[in-house]
Every structure is written in C-alpha cells, then in structure tokens.
Image (tube, rainbow, N blue to C red; front, top):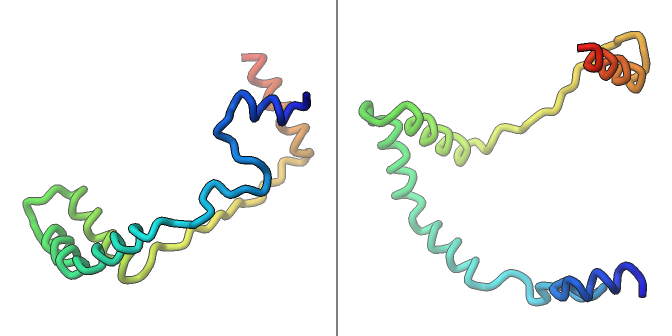
Length: 106
C-alpha cells in the first residue's frame, strides 16, 4: 500500500484527486449578505466620522475609524518589501556559520 492510500485511509476527509471539495462554488447567501451590508454603507461611514470627531473617544478608536475611512476612500497603502543589500565580504552561508560560531562561544 502506498503512502497516499494510507494517508487517505487515516484521514477520510481528504478529497480524491480531481474532485473539488466545493463543486458549486460560493453559496449564494454570501452575495445577499454583501448586498445587505452595502445598503448600510452611509450609516457606517457617518458612524466612523462621528467617532473620529468625538473628543471623548479613545485615541485608538479615533485612529481606527480614521484609518477605515481613508482605506475605503483611497485604498489601503501598498506594502513594499525593500531589503537593503549589505555587503559583509563573505558568502551568506559563511556569514550564517560565523553567527552560529559566535552564539556557541557565548
């Protein structure tokens, strides 16, 4: 018996190859909930504005409300993954080995 067969026998919830676990796609109720939420957009936005303008609200609440407004109006800021190149005069593997050696000495 191969490894895959053994795995399927011990985990009967796994799907057979080529068979989707969700052949009919997302349930139609998801769209209904989404449409219902969109109907309350104006009220939600007014609430967020009230929170940002409420001097008695915590700073955290005001910042979260302001962030939510900005994200919806302008989109979430893109995240950049910038890695600055650092030359240590050796290969990466040798550098990691030297760090490991330093840890052993301590």
